[in-house]
Image 1 (cartoon, rainbow, N blue to C red):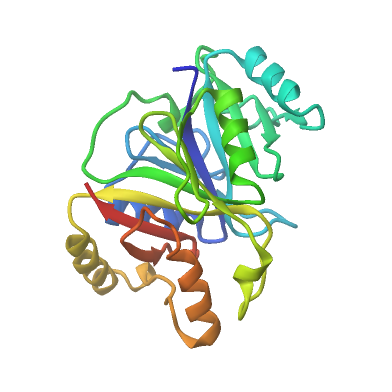
Image 2 (image 1 turned 30 degrees about the vertical axis):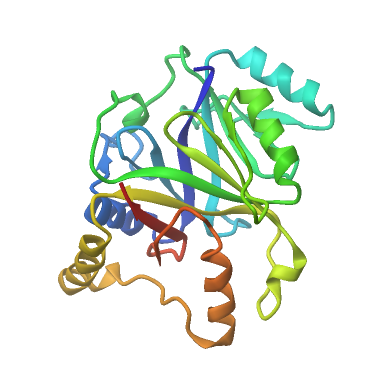
Length: 267
């Protein structure tokens, strides 16, 4: 395959606790970050690295960006410009070893790019792949034109396109992880504060939704810091949850410690 999704990044003031939450509930594994203890706490499901990064000045908390590993960096950048000459990319700071460039899609949603053969990956990103029963299977984006976004990700990264659903949702996949491209409409934000096109949530495949629910209660009993954000309370909370539940993939909805939306569905 030319490209695969290889990481997600969450910015948080509680980034270390958030990483522990994903280890405890979803069985994600941490690498050896002793060489960069102050920078981030990355964990992985064996294929996707979930990088919990400290929130810096001027930055919002929550889902920050996602990333691709590509076979040929030059070809990926050239395809972006061919799709739309206004799309830009910049080199990542030297202190970020796991990606070479940051870029954006037609909706200004940010992603990183790393070349598969660069040899620059570190920590959990340099570990080999493994299989586990709880793993990330989709990332959901809110975009102005899902069909245009599907064309972008398929033409630039060779992701496979699935037909749109009746509600206008398109999907593209690298064979394991799906980008769910849901339409962004201002009318969806009646009763709540609007947000721009962005990464809305991501989701896991699990062996049992009931097991996830039970373990959430057990984890809070062991460590109260693992209490997640409540969903669906008050009129605004109901409106936000209803919008979150529009995703055709997830069956059970929750947040992490930071408040990032997660949904889960069974294999």
